[in-house]
Length: 113
Length: 112
Image (cartoon, rainbow over all chains, first blue to last red; front, side, top):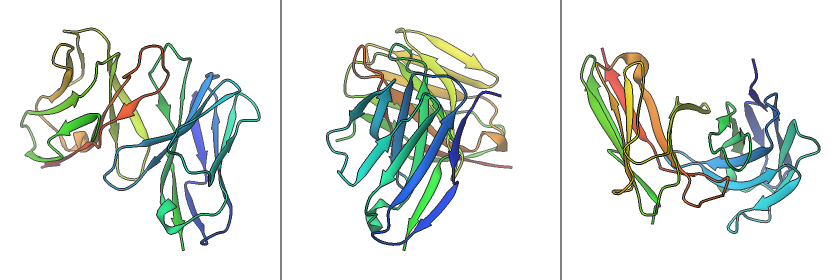
């Protein structure tokens, strides 16, 4: 089945230790998104790629970076995680900018110790 | 302030009861999307509404869009424990943009 896969499902990192979260998709969608979701909060868009074009949200901290080496994969890098970065990180895809229906992965729950 | 407000924040119903969840936007809607999220998991797409007055149903879940009121409702008939979870609305608030804004969600508990 075509899907969005996130690895790992659970990630524990130490304060200040860089961490990378992975997302892959078999849908061949052009757009890939990264969201941060804290408990009882709305998913907050961090950035998205439309094909190779990177679109950063104005309020996304510089600590968060992303890479999309090819259509299928997208990575979220947190350079120096703080305790406030502990959250669920959701990856999503959509076919293109005219179709807003987004398909989500299962998420990666990040714990910062 | 939140661009999408959902109400209620949480809801506890007895199995078999009907319920309604609302989503109200502070801006013009270019599309409204309903998702369901189980605790600790990703969002599962339920329905998409794009035109004012549009109504869609899937099994016992019906969603409607009132474009003039910038509002959508999600109605569940004869609720079951399998309906339990967090229901989120997402909306396209800019024409031609691929971004969605989400509400905080409504947590639904269905007691057997």
